Image 1: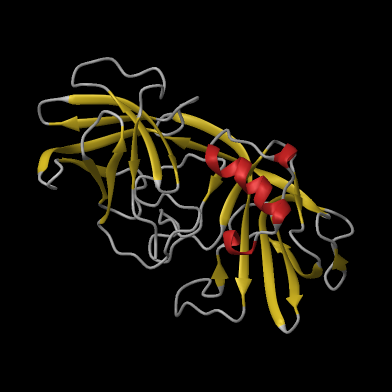
Image 2 (image 1 turned 120 degrees about the vertical axis):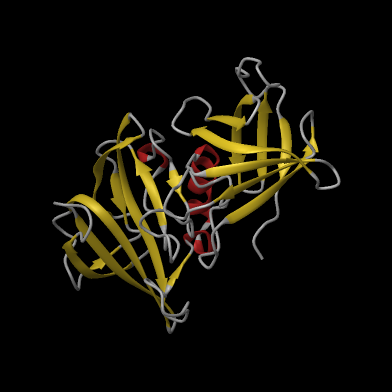
Length: 289
């Protein structure tokens, strides 16, 4: 991982996963992880290697991108770190870097989600495996960082990922999602335990609209019982909120998703939103193959 535990943060999302489809990756899927840092957090080399490039960031105005080449025998990888507000003086093209060495400082991002202003620091972390090729899409060599974590990296990931919240996770909930999918995109969640509908399906109609969802409540037979639209408050803390809005009713809830497991506390139509997940139902969904 390109950070230590003390430099992680979760003001906006924590960690945005590999493969999700959003406005900037609607066709190809996200080719890395966006990792949130505390303000002033230090971005570090994920492994020993040689600096391959230091350049102006093509997206973040005023930011920088660092590329590092790594080898495992005759197998070559490249790690990419974008949106650095500054680059360390000893990070020079052609020079070696050691695992954990500071490459620079994570850059700040300011945006508005709905009417909510959000300011956070982040870097995009990407791994390119030059023995892998996904076809004629942008970043065809990109592979998920999850596949290559060492023990220390896994320990940091295991503390960071469970806290991640992002708009795409009702249908793309994994740290490693398939890049090749089509829209509308539907994911079905089945009740495993607790009180709640036997199943809920969520459909994202548009890859560019991250939170544009429809829902369908399902009976055990799979029959649709109720349908409508979804309103997400994924920036809400300590828990993201979810509203299931049907033609004649509104159900208010809170939720938490980690990979194939969703905890969902949803109130009866017209009842107040649950304050916590104490009585939440557990739902499961299929993992990617």
